[in-house]
Image (tube, rainbow, N blue to C red; front, side, top):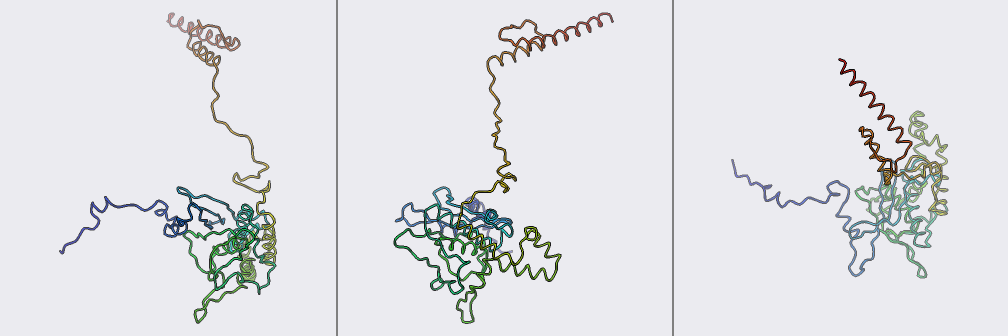
Length: 349
């Protein structure tokens, strides 16, 4: 048998350094994070903002973060479960909902910092005006020399795959339309593809279709024609809410207008919150589990009561609650009488 060199010996394990905790948990891509948060030294403590988009099974989370020395600071946030306040009660995790969530976050950031950039209203635009904000495939925002610049942030997708047509880019599109300056290209939006000669071809009609829920409407019509039972099972919540395939575009158009009108709309009293009940029905009483401190008289009474229960009759009556003392003394006397009777019976035996 030939010589086999031991690679992982004692020296290897003594010098082994584990990776960061969130890397071991497959939660953070530190290779990407390092490039998103590092700032030039000549910019001193100027923060570098990130537009973070995360998806769960039932929600979409859009947040603006800046990195500090030992923690991240959340500047603003928006969630898809807030969309029912603006008229969207179903389909809270699709591409159209991602666009609405990004738009909601952008309007909140602009309102917080007093920025006046409104962004294009997609419902009122002609198809010839789509894509005018891209110069040679890269997003460019018009700068106003007289006012403040738009809020600039970098897209942070986490560990998600940046495939063409991903919902990530729906949230990105909504945030840019709402007034945020997020550097990106238009090659990953729905309908974008490479031509035969390698040139990029974008499909503005497809983008509009996805923003206003047209892809969902097409699937609803198709499923309803093929199998009515499958349609009722798949779109049961749409049917219960009275939303059909022809109502989706109007629903999202009104949602966009409502978000622009009031991005910080308060939660309705009937809306279920963290405690699974409306704000109007939530108990406002503060519970206290702290044991009340006993006073001097209460402590003295407690000691005297224990002494009487032990059978000691000569207890000072000073500061004693007479009513309680009489009751305790009667019990003690009855107990003594019973014991004396038992002793007499034993003597007779």
